[in-house]
Image: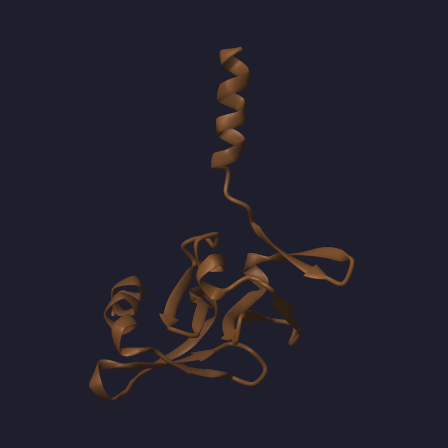
Length: 125
């Protein structure tokens, strides 16, 4: 009985390495390592992948943020990025940063004022 309880607790603590996204009548699992960034778009979240594809999730950015591992950082009210996909960091005015991502378009994401201090700490800047 107790062994079963311990095993159940252990399974619940194991973090997932994928993000489930509904695609029509299917659910696809996106590998966290392949996600470059997530962007809030109205009540949805657009998930951008390193292969250039993007997927739309019906979950809000805030809801997704609570399920993502530590490699993801909230950098703006509308953006969460995978810190493993940052190519370059440039200083911007008022303490903000411009993060250039390693995607095909070299997407530049500017940090929000209230997120900049935390981003600097997480990135060791």
